[in-house]
Image (tube, rainbow, N blue to C red; front, side, top):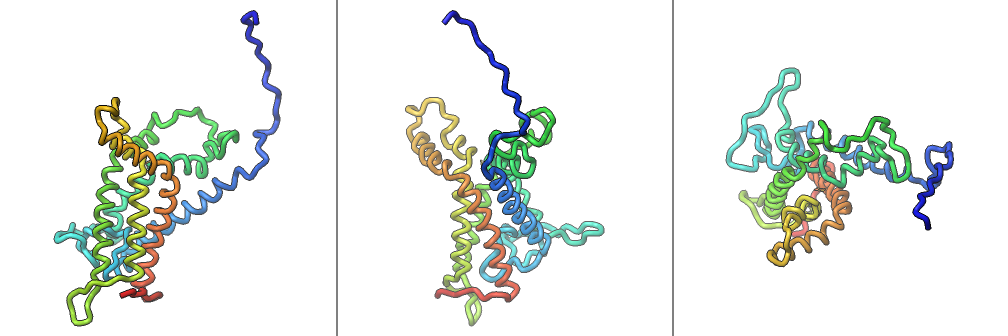
Length: 270
Ligand code: FES
């Protein structure tokens, strides 16, 4: 070797890419599933009805903090918001910004919707549909994705509130008035939802950072190190929890809605 660097011209390839597999399958599925969830959750939030079937409260309306709430979460309530030409604003919109911001800015979902909705890029080794220069998340509006680390704290509060709702789902109205302990299919549905949402929230990259990722010397912080190791293992499953919790939150609302509308009957186990 005499140190000479040999450079070869790139062979001229007319095709935009050389992939022959069904690379478009995953982006298409993401558009269908995520798109359906967005449409359903927006519709459900606008309904302002059938979100409570004693003792179940839909996660889309929890905490219910407006005066018009069928089942207020706290002993106080915010005044109802009336908009000209729109009328009464559904209480769902007072709270959905929290979990919505958390999911919208999630590192995993960013990858999913950048690829599937913006085709930027749609798959590995497939050209980007956006021809403008790549600026990453350094400029407005994508700069706002950095709010994710703060949205995580909001999401933790929602886990506490939804766990409380799931506990209340054991308290059924008694025949002679008052309440009695019970277990219905809805109780199980609400607990599965809380478990999946907690899995999603605590497997978050920001959670991993807060719990121990920012520590420089682990030997000086053994508890943080152990916590970081647990969260790191959970973090590997983050995409799975992202999808499971998306399904569970939508299906929990749907179950409670159908029970409230009288379309189905809640199966009472005891
Ligand atoms: S990275 Fe997905 S919720 Fe934080």
